[in-house]
Structure formats: C-alpha cells, structure tokens
Picture 1 (spheres, helix red, strand yellow):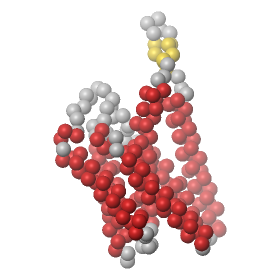
Picture 2 (cartoon, one colour):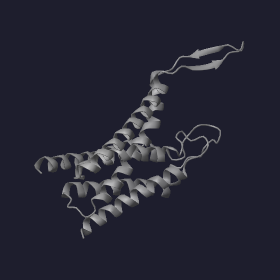
Picture 3 (cartoon, one colour):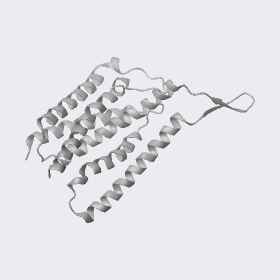
Length: 217
C-alpha cells in the first residue's frame, strides 16, 4: 500500500469536497452561475478521464465500445460548448420599445467577454476538480513522481487555506441584494481561474508522463 498516495488523495478529496460545498452553499436565485454547472462539469470530465485511461485497456473487444462511448461524450460536450459560445457572441439581444416593436440591442464586446469568463471559469475549475479526484483515485496504488506529489499537496493546501480564510473572515462575505444578479462568495469565485491553472498543470503533467510510459512500453 502506497501511504503517500493515500495521503495525497485525502488532500484532493477534502479540497474538492470543500470546493463543491462552498460553491453549492453560496448559490441562490440571482447567483451569476447556477448549481447545474456541477453535474454539467462532471459530464465534461468523464470523456477526458476515459481518454486518460484508454491506454490501460489491453483487450480489443473492450477498447472499441470504450472508444465509441468516449467519442460520443466528446461530441456532446463540443456541441454544448459550441451552442453556449454562439449564444454569447453571435445571438442578438432584443428589447420591446414603447411602440411594441422589437429593438436590437448592440452587444458590448468587453461585457460579453466578462460574462463568458463568469460562466467558464467555474466550469473549468469544476472539470479539473473532478479530474483530480478521478485520476488520483484511479492511481492510488501506483508510483507517483515527487514533483507531482508535492505539486498536488501544495495546490490543495493553497485552495483549502483560501476557503478557510473565506469562512473565517466575515468581510469576505458581502451583503447581497437579493433582486440583483451577484455572487455570495466573490473572494472564492474570482480565484477559480488560478485554481484551474494549478490543477491543469498537474493533470497535463500526468497526461504527458502517461504518454511517455505508453511509448516506452
């Protein structure tokens, strides 16, 4: 039994659980991003994880249906992302004028990019969170490089400390106007992009290392 990997997985599990709990507990009717992004991110993470584990399948009779399912999930994800991007950047917004006629509202590019980031930064963070959980659990008994091990622990500690600071410091939980779109935890959500980068580096390193192992084999 690899005790170091069990310790590392414990850190990952606690971090992901804390992140999901904080995100879900701060959702309300006028939140900028709804709680549905959690199951949506899970669907996005599954084909990526399947891709990661694909080289571990040795029997052809399992590889073909596995590949088909993975491809279908990738297509579903790409269609969903394409629809969301189209809605953000290419759909027209209207308002009803005093005469009852539809009036086209011109979109501000910078505002659109800001709204796009508001949606996709938590989505990317949730996807990488699920991947961290799945990948580390699937390799809990495998040998881990010291670099990946310490990077994972460090990333988890940083994310945990930021969440603890949020709960300990009342000034980081602003009063919310319940009829205006806003966030209950902007201190956390504004860091999602940095959390994603930390997780992303670890996950990409694992993909690269697995590729090298596959080539050598």
